[in-house]
Amino acid sequence: MAPGETRARYAFAGRIDLGTVQPVRLISDIELLISEARDLFWRPSGTAMWTPPDARLWLGSTDAYGDVDLPVSVTDDAPAADPETARWGPWQSFDAADFSGRAFRFRAVLGVESPDYTIGITGLTVTALQAA
Image (cartoon, rainbow, N blue to C red; front, side, top):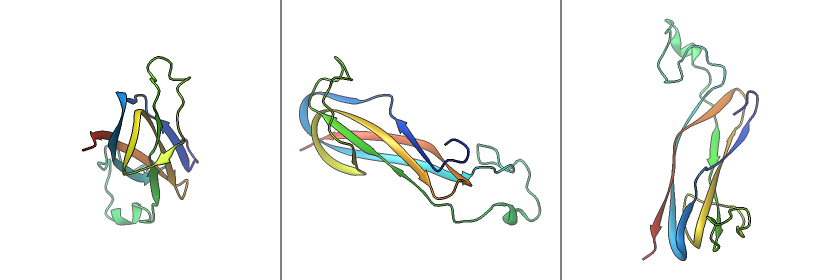
């Protein structure tokens, strides 16, 4: 997120193209870390650069609320030929859901309640399982 912002959007670089229209179950897996935006006492790896005797007073509030919404857009067209002319459906939020289509594109919408905090995505995957 940009400094002072409370929302950000990330578009996945890749898409899932099944080659033919078929039913699938999409399952998302998101790992995230909400941290103080201006925390000068911790390295990005999460280890302390310096731990004062009263470290608990420096760790800030426990009220770091945030969320990641993961929507999908589906098409029955062949997006590899020309992704811009494929007729994509509306964005639909999901954690795990059944869809029918040929190709799927994804984005992540990140948000925090306060600009004092930021979200770091440490893992973000979507798996498509063939429907039985």
